[in-house]
Amino acid sequence: MVYADIELINAEDITLARNHIIGEEEIRRMPVSALVDTGSYMLCINESIQEQLKFPLAEKRTGQLANGSIVEYDVVSHVELRFKNRRTMCNAMVLPGDNEVLLGAIPLEDMDVLIHPQRQELIINPDHPYFAQMKLKKIVGAVKLPRDLNEEKELRKSLREKCLFLKSAK
Image 1: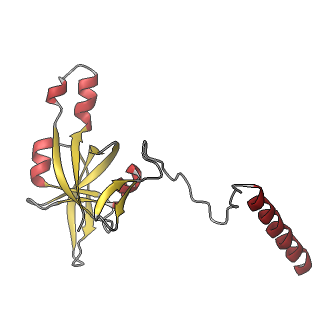
Image 2: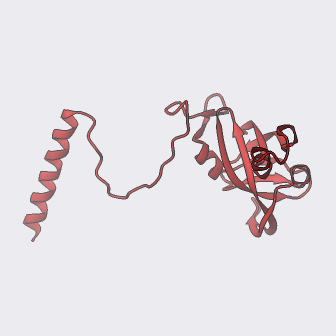
């Protein structure tokens, strides 16, 4: 199991502080240890955290637990999540009681972080150490751009062969 030390912040409080309605010291925030759970889509917090940080209720949603049972939970919004030099804004499902915090796939992907398999820890993507890089769109069947002259020659040759094949198929 991989755990990560993260910080949860009420993003509505950040807005209030920026507008000088509350002071910086009044922003509700909490450091927590979260189980990194790639099988979960969302961030999941517990009722105790929700009581302290008072995130606004967004909706009620059903979720399927690991044992297959379906349960209804509150979903809260305006959650700012921070890990090292990364941050993301997300919704969170509120689990009953003092259940452990689950860090799901959506916030993990948005922060561009990875699980290091040997060290069993959450790390910043080493390919993008200074800021998160997002995949905006995956285009199925898109042509890969060449990195150098040799790759360009190979790509052109492959395209010519495909064109000749298509002409002969008519």
